[in-house]
Image (cartoon, rainbow, N blue to C red):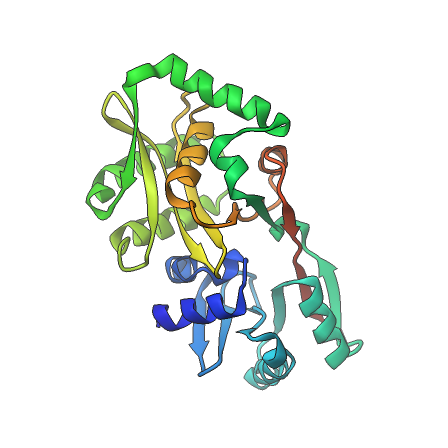
Length: 292
């Protein structure tokens, strides 16, 4: 199924992390995601993203097929009988739904789930006036650590070491009382590391004095975008800058864009992602059935 899904994503030319197969597979436990494929379309829904309702994603299909596929999906959702909504629609997709079912849905811009897309080359080099501070910080990290800091490709053989680091990272952030959704992400990371090669993932491991101090991984989505699914680092000053840059350098070459996914409404994360100057913000909308 992965080959068929990714082939369709390349054909359609999507840039959205919603259609990264590795993310769909690994987040099944967190969101209760289900995937159905036909010869020319893929349909996704989430059974547990929103309590009390089913969330449907826009069909993944060619533009000329989209209106028909969306209408079929709407009929399916209505026949299913459970409360439902459409989640993660682009502005154009929301307009198609509104034209097909005028007045049936309340359309809401979902800024927390907008996706950040960057030109890959500036991220790889951190060159340019807009990234001067990021470049300075990454260099400072390297200068401070020197030869103690090493970067190597992430592979399945590193799974146990990375999971041990992830447990330490989780313990620190649980103690800090951060977002409870981290537990779902933690489970998804374990699944990704278990099936790393089969899911077509690539990434990097950062080590300090030989011990894992950070990691990042991702996968292609569509035909010109590399999606960074996860990046974690220790509290070492500016190590996150290095991990981000190194993952782009080593994994996203040959891709025009890097998708750093959403900020899910976390103010600090939003400020950080904006500070890297995205080339575009992939806006998202949700469509909820109007009462009555």
